[in-house]
Amino acid sequence: MDALHPRLLVADFPACFAFYDAVLPPLLGAHRVQGSAQGPYAHWDVGDQALLVLFDRAAMAAALGEEPAAPRGDAFVCRVADVDAAYALAVRSGGTAVRPPADRPEWGPTMRTAHLRDPEGRLLEFQSY
Image (cartoon, rainbow, N blue to C red; front, side, top):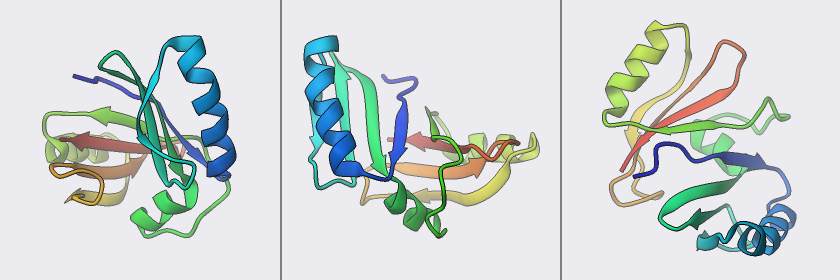
């Protein structure tokens, strides 16, 4: 099970994809699990653990119902047992709601996510699958 997997929101997906696809396998023994230079998503694992995820910044903004904005930091993604409970706790603890928990079959057949911002505006995603 992946406890965490870093996700970089990128504006130039093809260039970032080409770079990470070129360096992660030889440097870290990573293998690409999903994605292509066309985006909007790609990820690499080492063994059965997620190493890095790239996600197109404009595609994420569209999924959140926001306009693409200048980078405010990358997303912090956490796999949790209960997306609804995690979201409620985070909002109660000072997070700003962005998108409430929702099923995301377009991202994976059993994917459920919720999005909020931390007190500094950094995007957080809770997910289960």
